[in-house]
Image (cartoon, rainbow, N blue to C red; front, side, top):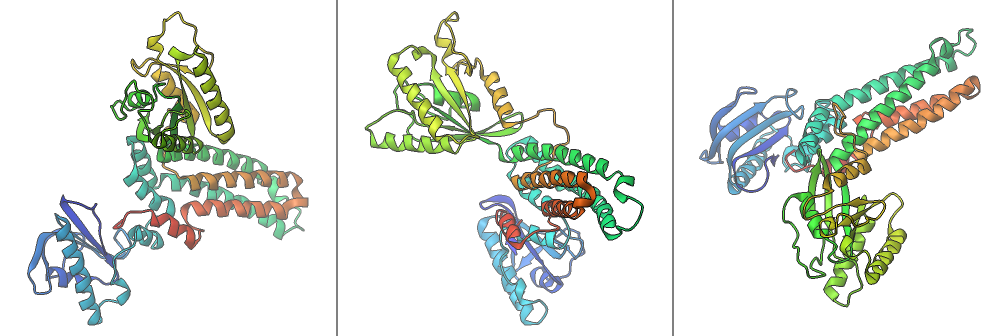
Length: 460
């Protein structure tokens, strides 16, 4: 049992119950039986038969429900107190029904996060990739992410995985047949073009992996940190990218003393942009804390925008400080973190002035060069804007598909050796199938399920 709508006030609030044989509970709550899958306007009764509220009650008998069990939804007015009263009444009524032997005791509790979706998965109403897509659809931060999650929920991604699995199973069958009947004159593998089948399967995996990477990018986005000396225009750049005055901008050095974060989107891809305190030596204790946090953000970024001030590029002190920051970044940045040099304040220097080689020349004030920066950020993320029919994916899906690629590459090596390595070939194909099955949940651990569904909201 759980309140299925978000906390706070609203026009409508939903209390959802899932379990076995809920008919007696339904009668206790609404005073009568309900027609299956038909909304009924009725009172929700307390123990004395007085209506706590009036609204719509819908009863979904098993197995034709979201969870595959009996499901009851009470759609009431969306006040927090009303919903808590209804939840308490459901628990009370369930206890009364259980005491009469009409409902088993394990159902007398509030649902855990994601438990409704977990039961739907366990009852074969959806696979694991589809269950994850529910949370992704709820959490989608862009229209493209929402549409991709919807496609995954409808089973598009799962169908791709099932097609790969079916092709892999067929190839395993050929290999196992060759192992089981070595005395036969017929060469099963050559006759069935196992080499061609394996090559085609590898190509299919690469295509699915590419789309999965794009789907994971839509879900996760990339973390972009804006760094540089004070007054280089970092806050102005954040405001320009976001299209809103999010960070305070003044001529005073050290105005930004802590991280300011905003999620923006470029062609549907979420970018988590962080403005940081100016990097310099400081005796101000508060500013020193901000600078330390800036370095923490830089070292955990997917990309760093190193902002330079074009109006000060010839000043000796400024050049020395920029050089020190460059050295520090080289030491602290992980190898996979990209750095883009941004030459800001192009509007404040003569058009004929020479510009540094490399990086992006722009003006956060006028918007000059921002489109070029956006294109570079998308390219850095690996985004392909022409992708059609994209589905949502998670990092674990991408990792599983990479493992499939690795096992198939090893299988290709063993296949060229044929009889000398058929056992190893069969084992690599088996391991590849296990990795595919983990994506849809056909082969998975309870620990993984716990991690996945604990991230869901309560009531879903």
